[in-house]
Length: 277
Image 1 (tube, rainbow, N blue to C red):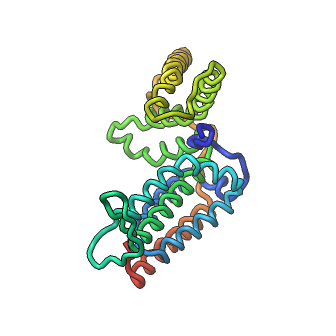
Image 2 (cartoon, rainbow, N blue to C red):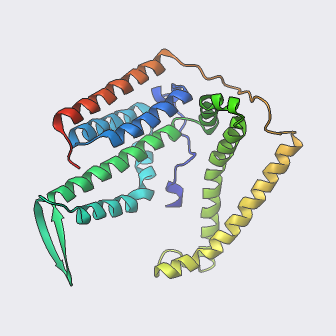
Image 3 (tube, rainbow, N blue to C red):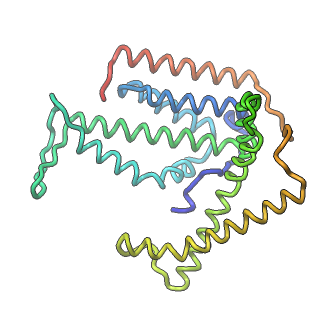
């Protein structure tokens, strides 16, 4: 499960999404996430889901990697769907099933089923969009694009370059920390620690020997990195340069046009077919 976390991971490729400008990908991903929450019925959400599948195919990222990126949030999706299924109440609801459980009666309505499916699909589309962004953009290009987008804030004395460097380091060390956690867990298991069975309290106690060396290792790496940056006279002040320049191409503007058409389609569908939630 630890290895399934894909934050900061990059899949090398030459797909159309890989060749896009990092700034445009950031803006379009943010816009895509906003449009997901604009959807009000299954027709508009289905359009967004179809667009997500098309983007996944264009990225040429193996389906196994995309599915593995969603494994860590399976429990969250099931929990959210169950809550919406059981607790969607109101006047005029169409009852489908009534389940007597001890002193309570769990009522499942048609509206609850619709809300559960709708919410689950939204979450999956959000995870897929964010995964495609990290899979098709290197951490350095991602933070460079973010720095360029936030560059107007530098006129207000916001340390944009320092913020970009912090983002670069954070994304860079996420895979390293994941590997460190996996190594420590394997070492604890070899010593007889039981990390996967037992009650919740026992599992939390069993993870204490994992968290302590993890924090020690993280602080040690941070100190070594700080010394290395100081020895190279890094101060965080002044304009930062990049080895690779970001350049907008016609394909980036074509992608922005497709995003505008997709947004217009969602708004039109919402207008003609109304809302289901």
